[in-house]
Length: 347
Image (cartoon, rainbow, N blue to C red; front, side, top):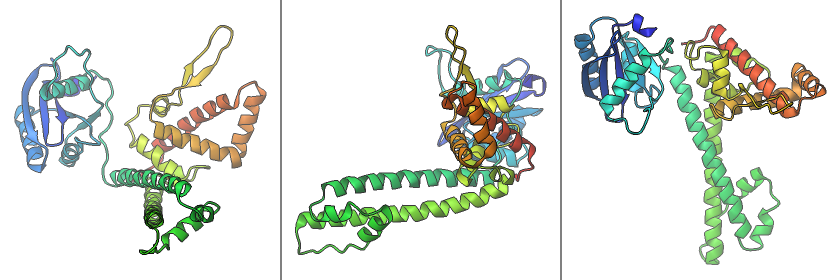
């Protein structure tokens, strides 16, 4: 147990401007000190000095949200050589229990003490760069899809003969033509307003397309550097590899391949009834990771001989295509997890 390895655990409930600290004695679980600091470098230095004063022996920091509000403190403490534990959000057992930032900090510390194994501290640097690039690319794609939907809706209602001339064009030709529009200020007001809107939408989509492609190139370079063995797998593209890599994050975060499969939502769930014995996939977990695994399997079904043969064998045994896909996803999660754990990766 973690309580046998430490003398103190400092729980942290981080927020945008402040962080609540709760110092808990490992052997007894008793609260020895509470404090609140500012969420900036001066506040982080104060937290470390308080830890030296009130938790002088073996200590660890149990921080919620090390990827969001707690990232600044976690990064600072890791650089100072402190032991940082990444924990999930601690839920109250019932709504009747009290809740304050200080109480949440103490709960975070006690929840860390109650577990046998704690994940290793989050690694920053290139991994955080990859996370930022993926989040920005996803936002650009959403905005691009929204712009295309708005563009199609506007073409449907635009006046003739403009609608008839635009409807049969492919997306690339449509965007190129609309970007070159020069509305006449002396013409019909409805037509002028429509042309201005169409040109603005086309230019927006083209800009977002260039942005998305540039971000994808940066993502591919980082993924090839951080996990070269991952991108060499059949059917694994740079975006799918980045999704799998970010979900895995670093060695020790996920205890085994079964936990990784549960995180991905590909662990089999019993769904038998009567004489029918079957299993289904879990509908929870990280859906981005699940989507990445699905895309990899879809790609492998087209070009990977072993995958094609496996699906055919499963169907011949009476399994449906859906059940065969479930088995493939579970195998793929196991294979990629072991690949990431065993391969030497960049820090």
